[in-house]
Length: 147
Image (cartoon, rainbow, N blue to C red; front, side, top):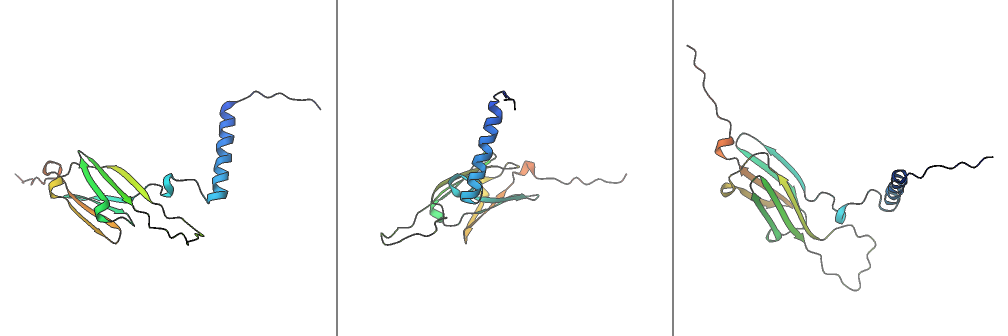
């Protein structure tokens, strides 16, 4: 039996290490790790119609006074903090999956909006934003006459 030498390939070694780490996280955590356990947070739905852009963000555990919403140009910023509950020294956790702390999410808006006319409501952990589009980006109908 002859010994074979193989050329060292650092890219292959990094790929093997990456696969091993993925396997480790899969076995230990049940999936790939997410920053702060939240993944992309908050989860957002964004849609538009002729006159407005609507944003719905699911933000459980946040008090409205701990939530900041701002629009700069065509960028929406959602910031907030989920406060951790006080723990009793007698508590013995068996499972702890909820995440606490600050979060921030920026979202590009598909059109310019009129921020002064925006409406924001927060109900049952869901933030509903209605952002009216600027007049110049709204579609205008031109009537064609028969001659």
